[in-house]
Image 1: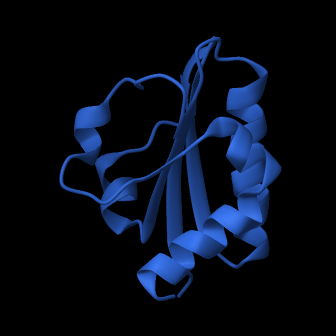
Image 2 (image 1 turned 45 degrees about the horizontal axis):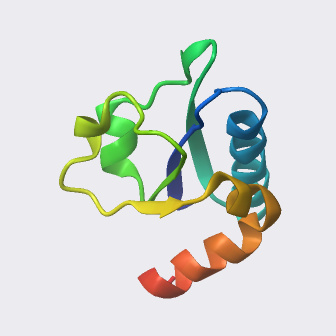
Length: 105
């Protein structure tokens, strides 16, 4: 069974960087064989909202955020990897590799 990643991407303007980071994470995770769901919080509100079951079933939780996203209480008690939006856009493979090493995958 594939490992699961959930993520939240949000930036101050909620425009390009939010969606570029989400796309980079989704593409790289799928290439590595993960199931993935990424919530974006942008100028058009919250899209692809993560539900409690999505979060509970996740092997990896990534927040690529430049602001405090809405609904942070959903993640209380879980280990979250917080990364910069620009870093995720530029090097999604390297970020996933570091997280995998940290978790012993």
